[in-house]
Image (cartoon, rainbow, N blue to C red; front, top):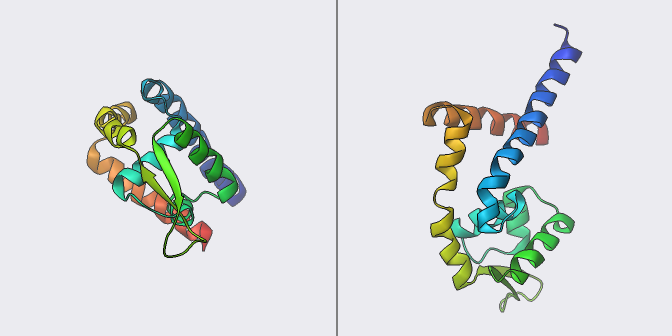
Length: 141
């Protein structure tokens, strides 16, 4: 297999795996009222509430023109609030509402369902995640 075919094969494998993940997540997240990108924002906030919009964008590799509409929809759904940082008016901080915090309990089953759908063990999934993250980081460098 030549380098060009290998490059295309790897790129397509990662791309098509992303599409397959989206299909798996859709019915799991639907009862929570979340899309996959919205779920990623919520996970980031469950891990560290009060992040600025720019910190969230860096963490999720999302540009502000993609992130802002997601945040607006989550705010309309009553899951988050956005407010100017009192110390630095240029920054907008994102916080969970009580409803957004409660959603964490409902979403607790999501990782297990995704793990089951992959057909991998936890260790296999961790190894694959590290390899793909390393690939991403190399490509971004």
